[in-house]
Amino acid sequence: MPNPVVHWEVLGKDGKRLQSFYTQLFNWEINADNPMQYGLVDTHTRKGINGGIGPAPEGPRVVIYVEVKDLAGYLKKVEKLGGKTVMPPTDIPNMVTFALFSDPEGNVVGLVSLEVPGPGPTQG
Image (cartoon, rainbow, N blue to C red; front, side, top):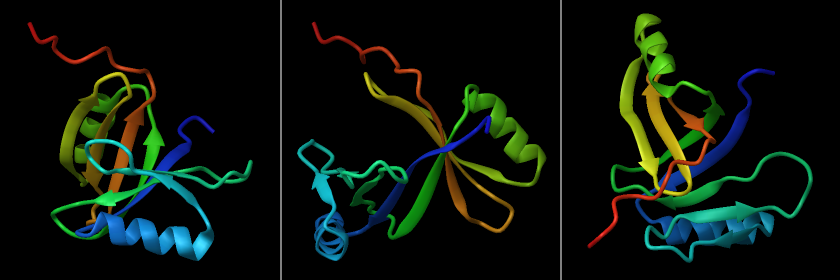
């Protein structure tokens, strides 16, 4: 499969509450020890894919992320096919570059490049 689903996330206004809910429901280990309080989910299985659960001030949504090599190129293709760019390519330094789009029905889907971007600007 050339473009696999590689991540998912469940977001809402109360990220801690969602993290607690899914931990209790499925016994998932969720590590939210980071400044964004974004919980990385580890199911400790070799099946499926892990994801994330965290806060989103704009409200609840569930997003799947598809791996692609050319984020900008895929966003152009999205627009040509009747979708819309929701978030342009965005770097999280030393982690990932991602973008969001909506399909013609309004579903939000993520694109991710797993080529790790370099560190952010240095402070001097």
